[in-house]
Length: 492
Image (tube, rainbow, N blue to C red; front, side, top):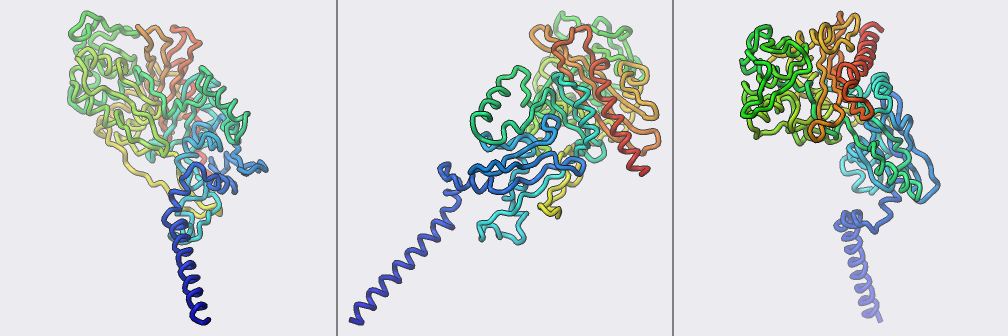
């Protein structure tokens, strides 16, 4: 009898060990694959069981959470959703996440290991922290000024602090309310179809992910290339550029909107935006020199993140001389995001160096303890400091006495460059209006802000649209807010 009891006990022990081994296999070795299985609804239920962390602008959350009472309990809400949509993106139970909601999803959802009190704590406990917060670099007054300035017209505004790379405003217009995509059900799907079917593409982030021909604003890059290469040594000297200017190897004449561009100096060409002078200088610099210069500013970079990914701005690496001439004035295949052109303005303002642009200042736990902070880091040395100082003077002249007078601000030194970019088959499309600029208070040690504005404005006639007329006033309003905030910080 005792022998049978021992055999039964041994069998039970073997079964217990097998059960423990199987449990370990499922809970440890197969946990990852089970978590990733689309049929495992527990992951989604757990994800939305707690409120999501907040995205913060100027000390105030611009997001929230709503208890839906459904199985996927907490849905995302947005305060002033259209204003901040180009920053936040959406967090949808149906369509996933985008922009900062995506880039910082681990912090906001509470799954990032950095939120745990000890290393591997959440892996061992299979628990989740409350969602952390993401504190952005955006300043609300600048964001609001840019949004008001565009007034629903198709376009974008980006403002950067040149010395640090902090993105102070990021606006894309027209916009949308991300909250309509938060939950599940027919209403969310209908909103998704409506937004995607709109010809105005409200969910397209024009500031980061749309590229445009930059037109004459690209002439700042060409001027930097010519000065750095020694093609121009005296900005006031004639450039030996004929008018009319025939594109190399063709019979096509390149026109000027301005008068008096024949044999004009670089200073006059920037002041009055002479196509012929800048195209000729691009050809003199040569393809290799122009490609190197453009890439020092960030063109052709496929890896830029802020932390959301940014579309590649393009400057062709293989071109004929006539194509190079057109590319040197921001035409042909040259394209740029508004962020890229804000970086061009920031490079001039910051003595030739571009600080890496970023949107997230720091991330914190739900109780406010800092988890990670974004430090300043250099992105590129776009030009020699001496070149940047010369371009500062030329851009200031363009605002004080040239095409950019609508951006002038009393009590501040403002440098700018207008652009009217042709596009469409045979350049028949309504031109895009561009303006890039930077501003420095008279009593400040360094510029407070660099701005890029593009206005598509498809309803305007070709004769009514220009960088100085359509885009410069928007840039001015944003720069005025930046200067006001800087003055308040210096004189509390």
